[in-house]
Image (tube, rainbow, N blue to C red; front, side, top):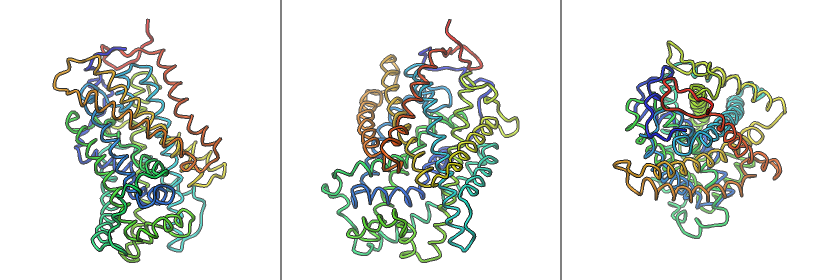
Length: 486
């Protein structure tokens, strides 16, 4: 494929999306995809009980540090990637169409997996909420399909409507957790601030990998800042700002909230309380909220957990639709998916196809009688986590390769084009090892089932690399077609 740093046609083609999203709106979309309240209520107990105990908050900080270093190379390459498509576009720019299509297919599978997983989680959460307020017990999948229907309507319309919906839900869920954090940490919890969280002996333990693993799972979707570049007000400034801000806000929020929950119950009881949560005998987040903020706010948090999951799955839906839109514009997927709605200026056809895909996969999983949390969410989150780390690794390699070919690129220091990508690769390799060595904790399945699930992203990536040999991206094409090489 062409290695030209800029591709004007990629931004002027007739199928380009439009919008005026600022840094704040894009950060809202990305943080909503991270589902902060969901992570605090679900991933934190897993990290504390199965990981390094009171040292778990540092696991979130380590994950954020790795992703922050990765972001340096990611945003440095941004001005040279003249199209939306995130990992697909970045990897294709640095490594060619074969690796680019491998990344695109991997991203489609990873996002589809986590989206379906969250639908399962949302069905369970809504049912739990209904039961809490005395309603009837219904199959979880009924609620999942109801959530899916609302997401389908919003995903079909203009992106700014989704941004507003996500923004409202996000502000509310973050506000209540920040209030809990402030009350607990400000009051010193049961036994004073747990400063032992940062002690070396509590951080460096054989199980720190579990904390890092669940921290990484909580960051899935953060790179979506680049997916919205065509709809950003000023992409070359907005995308870097949104990327750094998203990583810092997400990482800081997770770490502080994890520390607050540990402080709230005390260092001596934190692991036991988290363990009871996993056993279904309590709820780390909700019980701590009730103790420090009262019953009313506990109920509010339980409601916001549902809105958090909704915001999360809506964000993933939007990202998936734009991946399909971008690939269809290149002829990799059917051209009909590159249709832009004349009124909403949204990839509405791709959105409909993604809705149908989710309905089919969810129906199959529900028909198999799987548990919504372990069977649906756990296994799908496992596939998505492996896929995400693989995509981050490939993107970092692409950054190195691109700037190795374009050493004369102005105003780009050696740190951002060489040192940071190398550090990111090393950190991500270590993270991948931690994910795979603790994979059964995410999927909840046997070693055999977990191994098969872990192989899915790698197999899909290889298939994309193989298919990439059939295409050659040419910068001269006005409609962004991908033509077979002569």
